[in-house]
Every structure is written in structure tokens, then in C-alpha cells.
Image 1 (tube, rainbow, N blue to C red):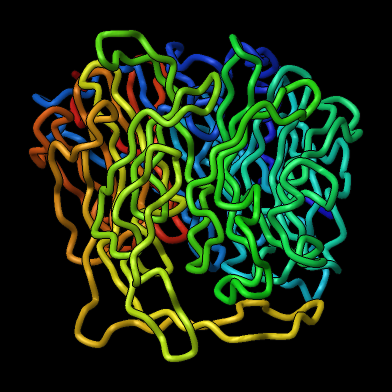
Image 2 (image 1 turned 180 degrees about the horizontal axis):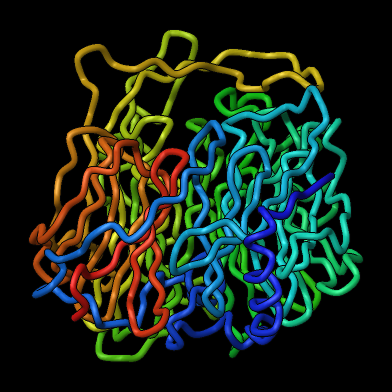
Length: 532
């Protein structure tokens, strides 16, 4: 491990910011009113909704680039930057990380982890961001470690193993700070790992608890796996969850079972894969779960960010959890007990007719796959994926990047071999049907799509909502855009030069509101050209 400070000219900035950093704390994780951005999804409820109103539908056309940070690192950003007291903290591919002056984009320090050779990484050498608590930053690593850095200097404060990377464990998730704990997930289902969610002491790095997403025989849910398939059952947890302080529950999505497609190797519903789990934040004890896709054979991870909100349904106030799932259905759940309140498709779905009253999908023939192949919608990328959605309490709408793509799925037996991909199948694109993407606004009460804006290609960019009535989103052709949150009218766009794979964020500094997007290997800060 090593880090490098920027040139001597930047040292004064480091010393100055060291005096001002140090008080974001746990409380700052809960609200975004200060104009800072202190956790992956903006705050604990993961709404990715900002109270800032300087940029409005009337003036958004005057947005202009203020600075561009070129990382010089190959690969694409999937991280959301944090901003605290005028300093931006950013992680990138291959476990690079930076502190930048949020006003100018000037580098203050840079960190890079030295990674071992021969890592088994399924789906990109990416990282989704820091967590911050006081003067400490926390980052997961591709070799399955949790690293704490000094926010003032980038120096390593502790480095602990989450699990053995030689067993094909890896980590890309942005941690979540809850009280005195750092909560992280793991990746590696495509290599047949056994998934979990871990909590570590924020001061010492000592492990506080672990929740296994694949239970062993004799544990609740253990009877949903045949034979010893649970030992390599998948269930990755590679996107950040949410937290309700009033219930003291952490909500986290879980990934696909392994092998991905050949379900005969793991008969049963395969709990707790493709589910959301509600865990006691202090102990990691499971309070409830909801499984979206029992016995998944299409690789439809349910790691999508869960959004928490208080809404009215059937004339009564409800504390809900909302999620647009990779399987093509949108769900509204009671977040206190996991009761299903609404489920409706938000993209074309051919594998299930509907979600039954018991909460389980009513399957169609397209859900059955074998060696001859079956065309199913959505494709392996899903109706949506890791891209962050957002929610505006004023409009009552949930904004999400969607994908309208179908594919041909194949399943066949595969012998498990440690260190080798464990798919048990294959996926084939349908010639002449590339599909398309769309930004959609969903009513969580009815589950209906209220408006959409189509993209030429399937996209993986996230969204941001603001209290001024705007939604910001990016797509694969490189455009970042602003929309009217109520109507979906496209109000502004900027071509960034590369596809967007992360969610926009916003912050206020020295009286100016900034919008920040990551494009390819660059980070772009935007603000009004001539003030208000």
C-alpha cells in the first residue's frame, strides 16, 4: 500500500482543510440539508434527493462546466463522490482514491492500493465510493479488505481483511456508516462464493458481526438449498443499502444464487439470494426478508438501492421501502415488517405474469430455460441494475434508469471448480434487437409509470432529484441531462464524451450549488454560469 501527496503547492490546502474536516460525524449521514454529500446515496434513506434549490427549471439552461478532473486511470468511474467542508473524496478503478478541492477540482492527495496478482473479478475493476466518519474515510478493496484512511492526508489508519481473496471474494461496495460501525458487502457470486454482510468497528476495524446471505443447514432458510449447494451459493451484496434510525434496521439487497443459470444444482428457493434483508444494526440479526426472485435462473441480482420513504397508501400513512428490481418488477414494501404493498412491472417482463398475494411471482413458460435456450425479458442486465434511483417526496415519484432488452438464456450442468467462473449457462443477445434505455418516473402507490424519456441505447447511469423540481440523469451515449421532475420535460443536456455509469450528486460551497457527474475516467463539476 502506498499513497502520494500532490505537489508541494497543494500542501497548504491539506493543512488548511485538516483544520476544518472532522465534524461530519454520524449525524451528517442522515440529512442533506447542509448542502454536503456525506454518504453514497446522500443520506440514510437513500432517496438521493437534495434540498438545494439554487438550480431550478427556470435557470438550469445556464449550467456550465466549472472544472474537470482527469484521473489518468483506465476504466470507468462507478463511484459517487463525497463532499464535506469543501473537500471532495473520490474512489476510482483499481482502488485509486483522491481528495480534491471541491471548488477547483485541484488534487490534494492521491492514494493507490497495491493489489495482488491473479484476482478473480467478475464484472469490472471498479469501486463505488467512500464512507466518511469524522476524520476517517473507509473504502473496500478488490482483494476484499476494508481500509480506513486519514481524510486529511490519505494515510492508512487500518487495513483489515473482509475475507480471503484467494477464495474469489472481492469488494467494490461503498461502505455505510451506522453508529460506530462500518457496514460492507461482498462480491464474487459468479465464482461460487458464499455471500454475507459484515459490520466492523469504525475505530479499530474489529469485526462486529456477520450475516450470511446463504444459510447453512439447520439455520432459518437452510432448507431452501439442496445438498451442499449452500457452500457455494452466491448471494453477493455489492451495492450499498439504507438505514432507518427509528427502527434501527439496515436494509441491504442480495445478489443471484450460484450457479447463475443451472438451477438443478441448487433445488429450492435459495434464500436469502435475490432478496432484501432487514438486519438489526447492532447485532446483524435478521428481522425480516423479502425474496424478489425465488430460485433465480437469470442472474437477476436484487442489490438495487432500496429507497425509504413515508407515503400515504389507501388513505393511511405507511413507512415504506421502494425498489425497482433487476427482474423487471417495481416493489413497495412495508419497511417495518416486509409486507408487500405493491408490485408491478416497469419494463417488459415475460418470465412472470404478476406477483401473487403471497409475494411470490406467478411464473410463465419463459422462466424455464435449458440447453436449447429460451428468449426471456428482461435480459441478464435486467430492467435496471446498480444505477442509483432517486425519490422526490414532493412529487411522490421514484426516478430510475431502465433497460428494455431481451436475451436468449441457456442452462447446462457445470462442475464447480474453485477460482473458475461458475455460470452453469450462457446468455446470447437477440440479433437485430439491441433494445433501448429510458428514464422512468414511477408512482410507488400504484406502481404505474407516470412519464418516461427514452435513450437510444440501454444505459447504466444513475439519477439525482432536487427540491427545486429537477431530476438529473446520465446515459450511455455520454449525455448528462436535466428534466422537469413532474412532467419529464428535458430542460438541458451536456455531452460529456463518455458513457455515465454512476449517479450524479450535488453540493453547496461558498454560496454556489454544484452538480457533479463522473464520465468515463473524468469527474465534471457544473454550476450556473452567472450565479443565480
